[in-house]
Image (cartoon, rainbow, N blue to C red; front, side, top):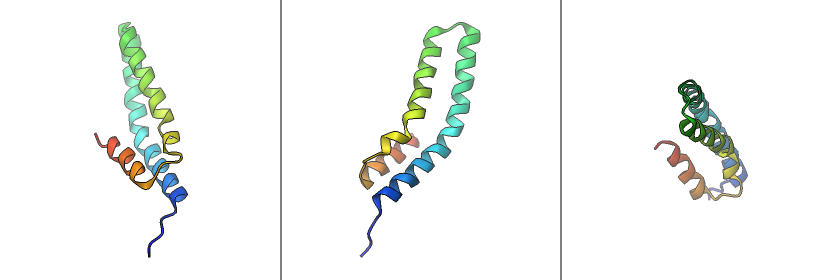
Length: 78
């Protein structure tokens, strides 16, 4: 019988999220800079909100089941 350590699964998913979001942070930094240069406050605000979402993403894994963790990972591919 295979027993899955849910705490370990959570840490693995968090690590995968952290690796994935590095590229997202870089793209988002460019979007923020472009919005500042263009004076586009709406685009800047959206980029700042996305940056906050990226920062908070690993914390969203806490207390999740294996199926919920799989859904979080699959949402990163979209």
